Length: 276
Image (cartoon, rainbow, N blue to C red; front, top):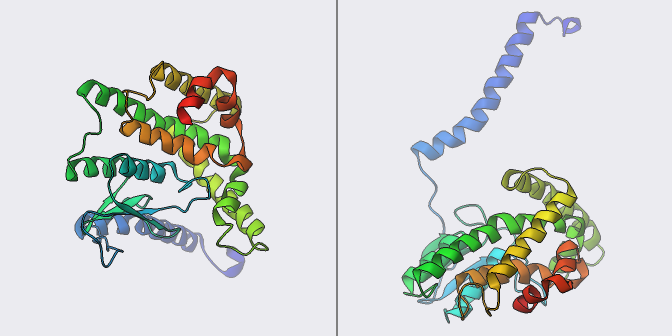
């Protein structure tokens, strides 16, 4: 800086100014939310039908209605309880929590699959579980599936993300551009997943992640026992979660990884029968 005639005072001021600008860039959006509040969510369905759930989700494939387990979870719950719904596939729309899925029902917006199932239960006066005990066990298993098993499966999925994206975008992108899109998308997606997995579970070796996933599968199979479904004789809300986790992943045979090997092994024959 001296060669340009800048003194130490100028340099210090510049560094200070850059620091202030950086801090303001992070603080101003927070202050805006704090004092102004969140911008109201704009409903996307302009002519909604009464009591019809409009499910905004990531697109799926020929073998899975969505590649997001949380989107499949909501659809499964609607099907289980005969709630009318219509899919709205999207890559760009996001709910109030900046994620997918979200639903619009009777001109109201609901985001996050856990909240969505609770709202559907309240609005349509449904029974997610037959009794308090099965509800308690179901809730615990649901949280394990969504916050632990899901992240372990996603870690295993990282090496084949390009294949996953290719399957999802095959009908929407020209075949010449698909490999490029898949490669770039896989790299970006893997970076976000790595951060999420580290925050949710921690940083471990591949072998340790696989050991944890196998333990989750073992506990699920133990809970299942001789029952047809996880906590009751008939499917409940937690079975919808399980269908999302396994259905959206296991149904892409071209993207096989460690979880496929576990499920197809003799050790987890009971769990595979449950999934099927």
